[in-house]
Image 1 (tube, rainbow, N blue to C red):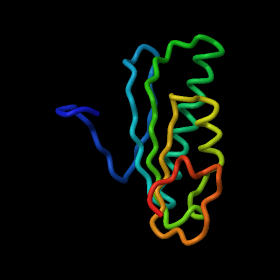
Image 2: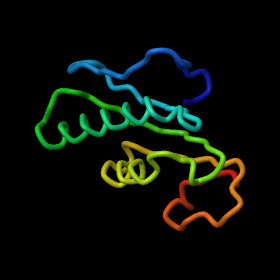
Image 3: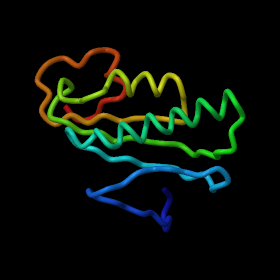
Length: 119
């Protein structure tokens, strides 16, 4: 976002991301903490599926980017971290993630280090 950008926020409750062919592309910012990642991980998988179809079959969905901000006490509590890293590798620049840990006491593995803030 830039200064004076309009954003929409949704906290809790029933929510989903279901773009339709012909919809204008949107850039998503997903924010999760702990087990709150569950519904957002499903949204990321759906976005990855749509990007895969877009590249492979020329579907009519116009997709923006998805940026996930995900926080937990330590890296062992970051659910789906390997899957999320895989999505980032499969769709570079389209799906990105920044992990934040608040109470990490041990060394962070090399694979996660570029994506971790906090400590």
